[in-house]
Length: 206
Image (cartoon, rainbow, N blue to C red; front, side, top):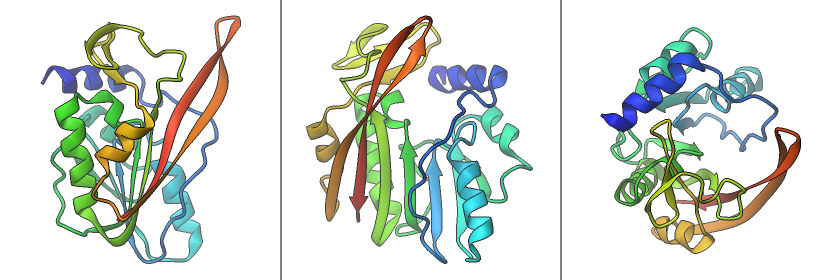
């Protein structure tokens, strides 16, 4: 409950916490798309617009543990919004052609990360794809906060931040048919100084 309360507080004051352009994964035609941890809609809303102008009948589902986040999206996203947890997805086996999980697993402890990864593969249909992204140990914010597990830190807002290494990501999705992992680095301002950010991006084939 403490973890969910932290996210309710977060989205209660910042319904659109992140902005800027973002690269979307390919949307399968006439398939079902699930975004886990849709939050403020930074991925979900552009995906819904892409589906809406593409002329296909793809169905979009957004899921988040925060009721405040979903309430902020209601009326803006034509897809289905579901409140739930990544470690226990309320969907049947093979329900989706594409699953998007961007900056979600880093906010879970190790057992939940393992369960969530298994759940994502479970709800993917055979041949379906998972788009996964999470911050890596090359990120400037690595080690910020109180360490509670290996490479996992708790910050003052009550939110957990885990930083991934490539082999860990490969192990999490070891049940997949194929996985390709790349590192994505960029720079953003932190006050007057530039700050180096880095994430792992995985393309996972079921």
